[in-house]
Amino acid sequence: MDELIIDTGSNVVRENKIEPLQVFDDSHPMLKSVMPEYDVTTLPNTRMNELASRLKLTMKLYSGLGLAANQCGIQERVFVIGSEYFQMVCINPKIVKYSAEVEKRREGCLSSPGLFVNISRSKSVDVEFYNELGELKQLTVDGITAQCFQHELDHLNGITFTSKVGPLALQLAKQKQQKLIKKVIRAQKNGLRI
Image (cartoon, rainbow, N blue to C red; front, side):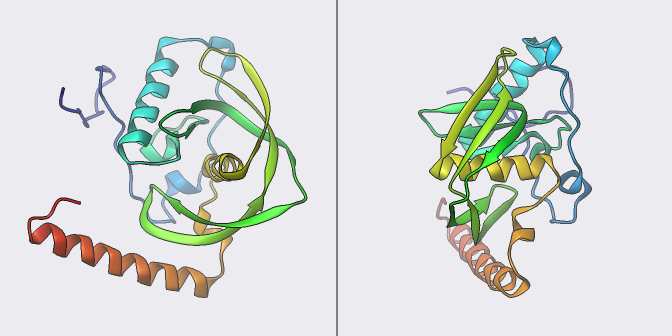
């Protein structure tokens, strides 16, 4: 198997290249900024196809269910969501309608490893977005896909998932996160691969 190349300093894109995953503090400007609209009249194009492929590969490598471009330090209004079997590239995504029914689920984020909080989100949402081919998609998504869509759209709008919980819940979650990090560090020092 080819080695993954993590350096993204140049504009040269290589096969198997992933985006560096930024582990930002919640106050980092990249996570607090609204990402600009993408010019969809230029789609399809090689640049967006390469970015979409790299985001999907990065999401898969880190076992994520979604990844926004700004989590990787890229100022584009695009995210990917999905699983091993199903992936969507969402450019200029919008939620047209939120269901009145909400559900509370445990939620994490690749930018905050090991941090999990319970968040209430609409159970289903009607969405619009362009795919990497420039096709306008209009769908109703529900369950975990709706949760992921809302989470990643929040990223593009400069909203972090930790802002959706109270200070006590966040403090408790961060304490659990620190315990998990210490456990991983101990395991690595003992030569175990995590």
